[in-house]
Structures are given as C-alpha cells and as structure tokens.
Image 1 (tube, helix red, strand yellow):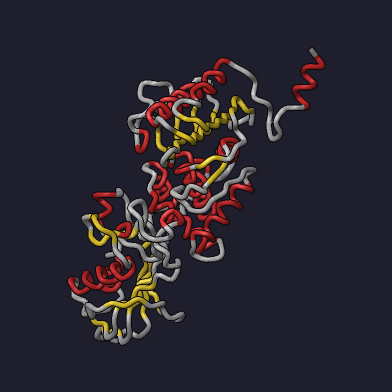
Image 2 (spheres, one colour):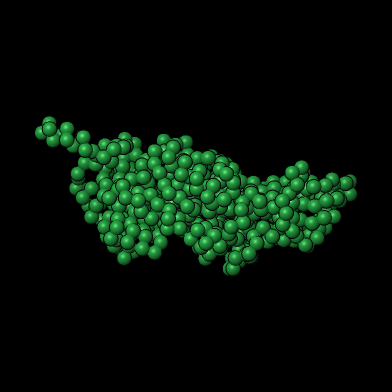
Amino acid sequence: MLLAAVVALLFAPAGGQAAAASPKCDLMRGQATRGSSAAGLFVIDAGSGRVLCRRAARKSRILASNTKLFTTATALGVFGAQGRLRTRLLRNGPVDRRGVLRGSLFLEGGGDPALGSPAFYDRFTGLGTNLFGLRVKARRAGIRRVTGRLFADDTVFDRLRGVADSSYATSPWVGPLSGLAFNSGHKSSGGGSFASDPARVAARKLARSMRKAGISISPQVGVRKAPSRSGVVGVVRSPTMADLVERTNVVSDNFFAEMLVKAIGARFGGGGTTGAGTKVVERFARRHGSAVQAVDGSGLTRSNRASPAQVGRFLAAMRRDPAWPAFLDSLAVAGREGTVDHRMEGTPAAGRCRVKTGTLSGVSALSGYCLARTGRTIAFSALMNGVYDLSAAHRGQDRIAAIAARY
C-alpha cells in the first residue's frame, strides 16, 4: 500500500494534486464525450487547487467564445473594474465673447464600444455612452458658431475593421471596428447595415445634433488627427469596465470583445491593434499560471486555442485576483440569462453556476464556476472539438455543470 502511494505521487500530473477517481468524475468524463469526437475536461476546486476530474485535459483545443474569458479578465485586470474609456471633443482655436470658435472641432475616439445614440443602445445593448452629451458640453463651453468643421479622430486604433477570421474586414459576426465607433458600427440607430467608416458617421451625427441645438457648424465633416495642443471642450465616459465586460460575456458580444482587446493594446501594449492587445492577454494569462494562444478578442478565429487545464487553472487563479468579483459577476447565470438563459433549468447548476459558452462550426465549449452545496467554488472547463451533434454536446456540458454544483 505504501509503495502504491509513493508511485502515485511520483507520477501525479505536475501543477496540482492528482485527480482522485470518484463516481462524480466518472460521470463527468462520460458526459464530456457526448456529441463530440475530440473533447477535453478539467475540473478544479478553485479554493484549494485540488484537481477533481480531468479527461484529455492538456490537449490544446479551439476555444471559440471561451476566448472572451481571457480577454475580459485582462480588461478588468489592467483597466480596473471601475475604469472607463473616454471620448473627447477638442478645439484648435479660441472662442471669442460672442461664442465664435475661430477654428475647428475634433471628435477624438477612445475605443469605447458603447458609444452611440440612446435610440440605439436602449434598444439593442442595454448600456451605452451618449455621444450627444458632447453637444451639451459644447454649449456649456460657450460655443455658438464654428468657423471651421468637425473632424473625426479615430487614430487610437488601426483601421482594420475585423479580425483574422474575415481577413480583417467587416463580417456579419463583428465590426466594423474603429477607434471612434458609433452604434456598434451600424449606419443608423435602427441597426441594419454596417457603416464603411464609423468615425465619419459619428462626426456627422454629432454635427447634426449640434446644429439642432443652435450651434452653427458646417454639415461637412472630415477625418483627421487632432492637433497635439488642442483644448478640451468636453468629455463623455463609457460605462465602467465591469459593465462593459458583463455585456461582453453574458450575451457573448463579439464587437465589444474586439473593441476591448484593441483598447488593451492601445493603453497597455504596442498600439491599438488586435495583435498588440492579444499579446497583453497572453502575458496576463502567464502571470496567472496559465497560457493561451490568442489571435483575437472574441474567439471568432479558429486559431484561438488553450487546453481545458489551462482554462481551468486560469479560472482558479482569477479567484485570487482583485478583479475576481467583477469577473465572476460578468458571467451568465445558468438557467437565467444570456447565452444560457434556457440551459440547465431545473438542475443543481441553475442559479449556482456562472459560465461562458463557445460555439463555432464543429466546436462547443462551456467553462466557468459553480458554487457547490458545500460552499466550495468549483472551476471547470469542457472544450469540445469535432462536434457532430450540438444538442448532445450541450446536454453533456450542462450535466457536467450540474455535477460540479453537487461537490
């Protein structure tokens, strides 16, 4: 018996205690293969670090929207849960006593994914930054007439509108990305088709709003970087990073995720590009004892990869991060909201598990946390590739979560 115990310790997988065989683990392993020919599973007690179950847990797999777990955790970690992105209205000339600005105005984007009109975000996203608040700021600054024009400055980001999955062009799944986005890239507040130049649309909408408010300004707008010595007329700030991340995760918003990864790159990386942002995301994962191959922020590109063990250990490590409360709250509650509002209903997972889904052709994933009946926080990751029956895969994932909630 002693010899067997020593051998077990010597050959236990590195990075944590070996998963003990148990009826619960056997059940989860069986569910992990439903509807899929290439599935992996990792379950860990996030408090103690004890591995509870694993199956092909070290093999890297396509993450799909489970990529957003890494993107959003990084956004919370680097910006802080109360961090905000700002959009500024600048001027490059003086305002005289009669309210005449002898110069031009510049609408400087800060990469805010929520910037838009109340008519749009009240209907479609539920949270937003009111661009037209800058009209009020201009009037408060005493501006009544502008001799020049309003220019859009979107230079905080590059001008690639999409990600690798669409050869960096706008696609039906995300875009168009812009450092000065407006209404999630749509042409109008009613949604519908996308704009080819979101920054120009934002400037036109603001100029029209200013004219309606009694400020005389040309209807012709341009796109140009603001001069370095411009004066600040006013600022509107995004919802908190906690709110932006919650929107991203609960409904799996690809646009918000891609805007956030570029904002991460602009502020904390080498520039406002997807590549710069994903490098910061990968560094953040390494600092938390994990790893990810990130090529975009949303998971649309199939080369976003990690193993179930890497996802699970990252989730467990986030429990010790200052961003933990906001990160946990950003995940959809099983059986109640977002992408899992009708999943896991009537099971122990309902109301007790917070999760992130992931779906691409032939790919399905479910990872997150369950508050077990014992009070323990169980982190799990079920990554299924080679999915040939999505409904069966979902049933297997849901039962894994239900079992995790019973630990």
